Image 1 (cartoon, rainbow, N blue to C red):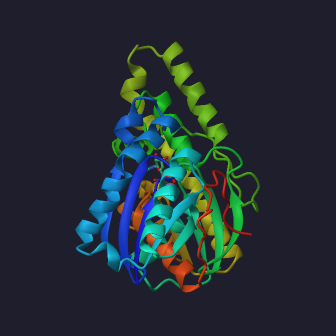
Image 2: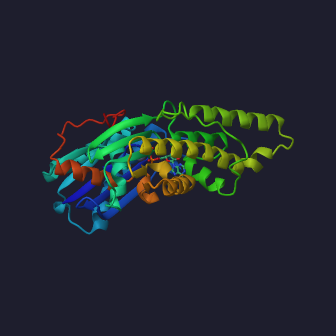
Image 3: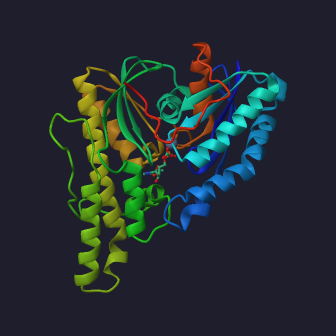
Length: 340
Ligand code: KG4
Ligand code: ZN
C-alpha cells in the first residue's frame, strides 16, 4: 500500500511517500519561512503563490527520492483543512488532478489528525486509549483518543494557540518568524525565574487554555523595561532571560493540563505533537513529569512534529483501510475541526 501525502495548509509545501502506513520512503519539505520571516507571520497571498510554484517539484522529488514509479502509487492523501484556504486549495487541486489522471482514490485528511497520528510513523507501542496534546501555530487542543479515527476534544485554547503566543512574543522581542525555535534557542542561556509571568490555569478542573494574558504581560514588561530601564540596551541584554521565563510559563500550563487530562481519564499513554512539541523545555518537562507519574510520554522526532507530508500519508492510510475516500468535489475547509 503506497500512499502519496500532500500538505500545503500553511507555509510548508510538503510531499511524502509512505508504504504500509509507517514506512517513510521519502519526505520532502519546502519551508517558506524565509519568505514570511521578515513580515513577522505568514502572508496568505505569498504562501499560496509559492505553493503553486513548487508543489509539482516537491511531489516529483518525493517520487524520485522514493525510487518508485508514479504508476505504483495506490492512493493520494491530502490536507483539506484546517489552514489558509488559498494554501489548502493548491494541495487539494493538485491531489485531485493527480488521483484523477492515475485513476486512483483520494483521501481528504484533517491536518490535526495528521499531527495526532504522526507519532505512529516511529512507534507502534502506544496503548489506546491515550490523551493527545496537539500544540501548533494554530491549535492547542487536548484529545481523548479511544482508537484511530475516534477523537474526543477535551479542551482547547480560548484565544491564542501556544505556537501563536511564541511567534507573537518573538515579534515583540524583535525576532523573526517563526519565533518558537528562536525563543527555544535563546532560552537555553536564560534564567526561567527572571520574571514570574502569569499562568492561566482557568480553573483547577478546566482542560482549556488561555495564552493572551501572558502575551499582554510580556508586552507590559517590554514597555516598562524600555521606558524605565536604567540602561538603554537593558532589554536586549535580558532577552534570553525573558525568553526563558516566557517559555517556562507556557510549558508549565501545557504540562499541567495534559497531566490533569491523563489522570482524569485514567490513561497511561500521552502523545504530544505539532510544531510546539519540538520545544526542548516542553519535551524535557513532559518527559520528567511522565516519569514521576508513571505515564508514558510519546513525542515524535522534531521533523515529524512540524508540518510534513508523511503524517498526512499515514492518516490517509487509515482512511483508505476504512474505505473513507473523498470525491473529486472535495473542498478546502479553513476552520475544519477534529473530534466530537
Ligand atoms: O505544526 P506546525 O509546523 O504548523 C501549524 O500547524 O501551525 O507548527 C508551527 C508552530 C509555530 O508557531 C512555531 O513557532 C512553533 O510551531 N514551533 C516552536 C518550536 N518549533 C516550532 N515553538 C516552540 N519551540 C520550538 N522549538
Ligand atoms: Zn501543523
